[in-house]
Length: 111
View 1 (spheres, rainbow, N blue to C red):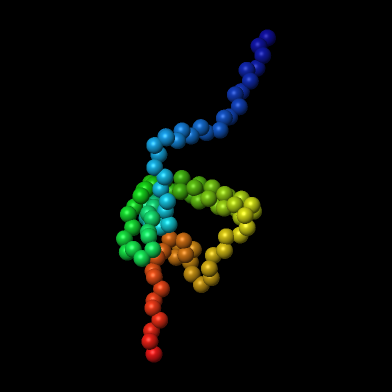
View 2 (view 1 turned 60 degrees about the horizontal axis):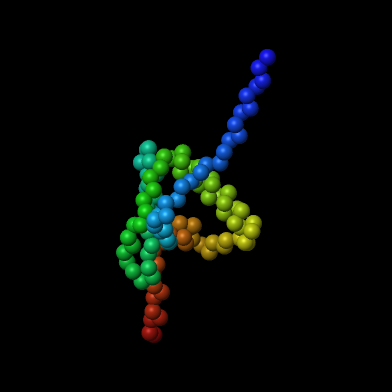
């Protein structure tokens, strides 16, 4: 008589983060796609500057991008449950508010 072999428990994914990994802050994103890839360029645009240097480019399949979108949605929901709703200004799109280049306010015009 044989005893059943216990199935190993699924272990969580172990990520190795290199000690010299460069952290990139991005306040600007450009997203493009082809039939087989989604390409996301992340950049940091300084106030008053007209140019931003891309600091990271991520290329993934459309399926992976959709799963990333789902994961972001779930994590933002948890964030808002813990810290309150993230308000988005009215009368503009999400992309315009989060990832548009900075434009300095216009100076008041003299009458």
